Image (cartoon, rainbow, N blue to C red; front, side, top):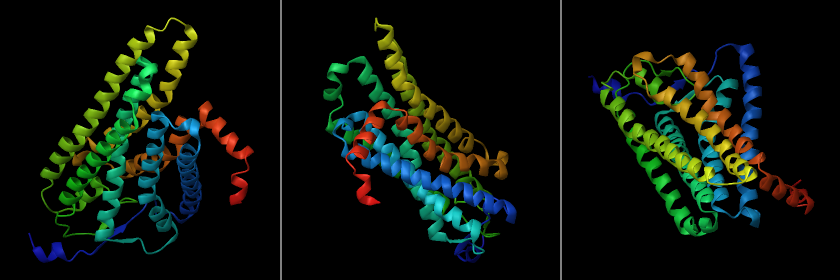
Length: 314
C-alpha cells in the first residue's frame, strides 16, 4: 500500500443525511427541535435529581447517569449534523472525526452497560426492599458506574485506534452524517478483517453482557414478584420495570442491527435512518419514557415550580 496516499488524508467530507435542498430545511427544523428537547429534558433531569432530596436513591442516581450519557453522545453528533445541513463546507478534520467517534463510542457503550446495571438495581429493589439502600449503597453505585465508564472507554480506545490506523487512500467522502464505523470501513483500502473481528468480540462482549444481565435480573424479578400476595403490589412492582424494558428493547435492537452485520450487507441510506433514531431520537425519548411518567419526578418538578426556582432563571 502506498504510504503517501494513506498519510495525505487530513480531513473527511460528511455527505450528510440528504442532498435535497428542500428536504434539508425540513430536516434541520425537525432535528433542531429534537436536539433542543434532548438538551432541556436530559439536563433538566440531571439538575432535578441532584436538587430534590426525595430523588436521592440508587434508581435516580443511575437515571441521572443515563441522562448524562444521552446528552454526551447526542451532543457529539447533533450540532455537527445540524451545521452540515445549512453549510456548504461539510468537512471534518481527521482528528476531529476520530474524536467524534471516540466520544460517541464511550457513552453509547456506557449506556449499553448501564441498562444492565439498572436492571440489577430493579432486582435489588423488588426482591428485598428493606435492604435496598444497604445493598445499593453510594459506594456500590459509584463502583458500578466507574466500571461502566471504564469498559466504555476501553472499547472506544480499541475501535478508534484500529479504525483510524486504516489506510484511506481513495475518496474522503463519508456517506453518513457522522464518523461511524460502517461508512469508514467502506472507504478504507486496508484489510478490515481485524476491525470486524474486534467489533464482534469486544462490542459483542458488551452486548452479550448487557442482554444476559437484563434477562437474568428480570428472571429473578419475576420470581420475586410472584411471591407478592397483593395484586396492587404486583402491579406496582411491574410498573417500575416497564419503562426500562421498553428502552432496552429499542436501544439494544437498534445497536444489534447496526453493528452485527458483515460489511457486505451495509446499506448506508438505511443505516442513516437507523443512526438518526439511536443517536438523536432515543436520547429524546429516554427522559420521557423513564422519568416524566414517574410520579416522584412529577412531584419534584411541581415542588421546584412552586418554590419559584425557575423564575430566577427566566
